[in-house]
Amino acid sequence: MTVEAAHARVLAVVKKNIADVLPDVDPDAIPVEARLVDLGANSIDRADIVVQSMADLGLRVSPTELGRAHNIAGLVALFVEQLTRA
Amino acid sequence: MPEAARAQARRVVITGLGVVSALGVGPEAFAQGLWSGRSAIARQAPDARPPLALYARLAAFDFASALSASTHDAALAERARRAGRRAPLAVQLSLVCAVQAWQQAGLGEAGLDPEACALVVGGQNISPAHSFQLHERWRDALHAVPPSHAMHFMDSDHVGCVSEALALRGEGFCVGAASASGNVALIHGQRLVAAGQADCCVVIGALADLSPLEWQALRNSGALASDTTYTPPALACRPFDRAAAGFVYGEAAVALVLESRDVALARGARPLAEWLGGALVLEGSRLPEAQTQGQVRAMRQALRAADLGPADVDYVSAHGTSTPGGDAAEAAALHDVFAGALGRVRINATKALVGHALYGAGAVAALACVVQMQAGRLHGNPHLLEPIDPRLPFVGRAGESARVRVALSNAHGFGGINTAIVLGA
Image (tube, chains in turn red, purple):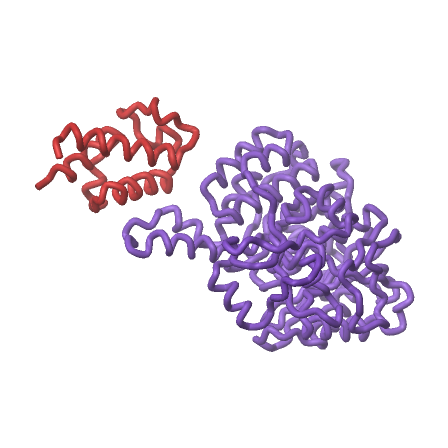
């Protein structure tokens, strides 16, 4: 999978799960430089979005690795990195 | 209760009601359902969830709409919506009922200290259906179970969500007592208020959202009515009738607001009924079979707590599940307690109309007591054709007008848990 394709897929999955967990957020207007907490997600919401996204993408990322992502863009980049790894 | 404690106990009244049930949503619709005499029990499609051929099923429930209909306080509705938007169905029903009751009690504008407002949720193992569905979904991918399940699997999720929606900051907890949970929750809520540890207490009778496992166990135990050939099918639920052959489930959640009478009157609230007494006694038996002695003790103690005797009681809301053993034990208990006072008291069983709400049954009955006392009317026993004990003064099939000043309401749970509460107009 190319990095571009992976990026598109990851972004779509993360947006879908944000929309699922935070129905008041417009999925087409999510600023990726924002943090999930800025969109109104509490700690459990954030965990749900992350876990469900990993499940959808077939990824298992350690909490330590996940801690490297500081906003939505960072989360997407982390998942893309995992997906395109050999 | 020791004499000194009783002397200092504050009087407690009911100032708000909330209900989501198959018979109606909101106390007015519920009351209309009682007067209609038409049971909400109906035959269900084979693929129904829960997997029961016969039960009283809630009409299509939309959480956000139900909240908007429960209060004109948009901020309250929004807090409740946010608190419960991803919670299990039972939590959403608790929220809707709590908002209805809070609204009716006028507590949004009352300015009570939130730390003086308590919460007791009646029910244990409230949502096995939720866990069952999650297991079906995640059995082969357990690593991806939603983190939010860490909150939702516990009954205390109701305490968290309702207290967040209503800004309750006093004491809060769940009580588990099987089908007596509603009465036990009321008893404990009343104790908090009477002892001055809360000025008001929201009491919830939670929906029993069981999974196919529990329903099958109940079915295999012989407790469920299984004959769907009656016309109408609801006739299968016939408390105290010779042909009674098991209980029929009814989906329902209820909320009542208990409040210090002094606090309520001082803020200009109108009490709907007063708490006169209550009792909770164990049989000392883990079995599901109801026993007469424990039920007699519960009724006698509740009346003693109310400083009343059987001759003072106008109306009994029977537990009346339509199980032959349970009905027989309760009929014997009623006869024991009311011997010599059978001329005045009237008896009905609300489960014929609403079904058996399990955990919430006691709270459903308490709400029905208040509604009937307010209306000066008792609903009928529509499916009582041949009473197992014709000496007992059952209300007829159609209901009757009645001035009820004192009502006694029974609830009994598996494991020998017997309760009775006494309410006054």
